[in-house]
Length: 57
Image (cartoon, rainbow, N blue to C red; front, side):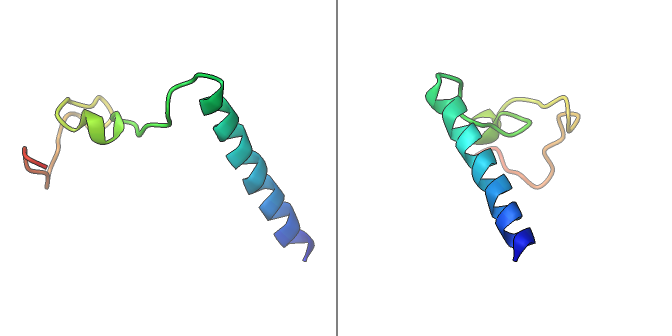
């Protein structure tokens, strides 16, 4: 039971910390390539290869 309580506490603290960061004026959390808004641009991480995606997605 202790491990469940500890796990829940860690996740809750992480969630609260992320929420406070957004409320403090930082931008929303994004993916490594800019999230859904960055699908048209190239990405350094994936070498600009967007296999399996169409241009109208």
